[in-house]
Image 1 (tube, rainbow, N blue to C red):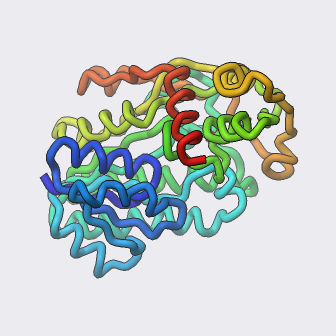
Image 2: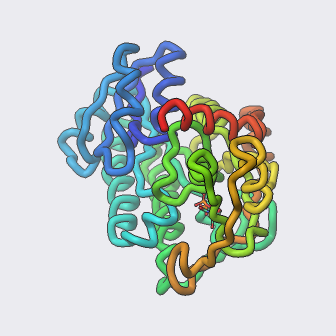
Length: 320
Ligand code: UDP
C-alpha cells in the first residue's frame, strides 16, 4: 500500500512512517517542519521514505500526494498546551484548515483518511473513564486552552460528515497522552520535560498540586492501533479512544522519573499561573475507556510507564 502521512516529521508521524516502511509499504510524508523535525525522518530516507517539506495548505502539492497514495494518515496539527496558549490563532487555523484541505482532496479521489484527534476534546468532563459517545464539557472561549479542543472537535465533525454525506471512508482516533522517544518537551509535554530536567540535574517542575493524573501510552502501541484502524473497514465512520488506562498522578510520575533517571534531582512545585497563564484550567483526571477499540480490532496498550520513561531517557541520553 501507499500511505501519505501529513505531519509525518513529527513525533508520532515519524514512528508511524517507520512502522509502515518496516511492514513493506510505500510512505510519503508531508510536513512544514513547524513543530516536526527533519532529524526525525532523515534516517528513514535510506529505507525508502519520500518526503515533501511543505504545508498541506499548499493545495496543489496536497492534491498530487493524495492522488499518489491509497490512504492518508492526517496528523498535521498544532500540538502541545504551551503552543496553544501562546499562539491560539495559529492553532485554530492550522487544525481546522489543514483538515478541510485534506478531506476535500481525499473525497475527490475516495482515499480513506484517519484523522488524529485528541483526548483534549473531552474537556473538563469529570466522569471517568471517558467513552467516545460521552457528552463533552468545554471551558469558555476566553480561555485559550479550549481553542484546541474546539478545533479538534470541528475536525471530528468534518471527518464524520464526509463519511455520512459523501461516503468517504474516515476514522477518528482520539489519542490520550502519547509519549516516547523523539517527543520534544518544548511545547509542554510532561514526560520528556521531566526526563530532560532530571538528566540536567533538576529540578523537575510539577505544575499545580501534582495530584492531577494522566494515562501515558507508548507511541509504538499507538502506531499499532492507527495502522489497524485504517486497515479495518468497519472502523470507518467511527471515533476511537487510543490510550493506556493505567492512571498516574503527575507527582507520582515526577517521583518515578527521578528514581529511574537521577535520584539526586529535586522536585519543585510551580503554580499554573506561572507555568501557563492567569486562570489556566487543567484537567484533573483523564482516563480512556478503551473497550470500543479492543472489541473491534483487539488492540490494547502493552508498554508500562517504566518502559516509557526508560525509552525516553535512553533517547535523550543519546541525543541530549
Ligand atoms: N505538567 C507538569 N510539569 C511540566 C509539564 C506539564 O506538571 O513541566 C503537567 C501539566 O500541567 C498536566 C500534565 O503534566 O497536568 C500533563 O501535561 P502535558 O502537557 O504533557 O499533557 P496534557 O496537559 O495535554 O495532558
